[in-house]
Length: 121
Image (cartoon, rainbow, N blue to C red):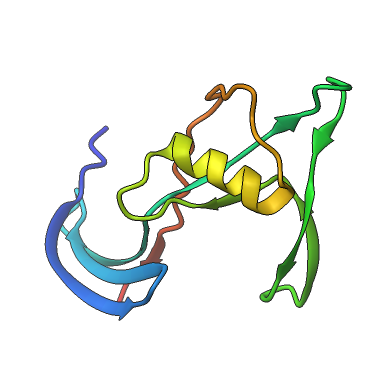
């Protein structure tokens, strides 16, 4: 089955400090056109920090999340700054958020988070 979409046009909707949003017009395999709203982001890292003293424990951090209007208990994480390598970001965020230094880092997963809104107009 062919799922390829042909890009016909791109329009910038929003340009911010952290995200950019574009709207793409695409041609679907059946010939119809559709719009895609796409959020572009520099990328981020998230750390599952296992305690040296007790390997059954992970380290969490309280973070204020304005969209929820409350704090959330989370794994340490942060966005990758322009020009940074993910390993550097991971070490920086661990130090900034929980004042720890990693004795080792191991990549356990890679995710691409996609949210595409189909808007037939």
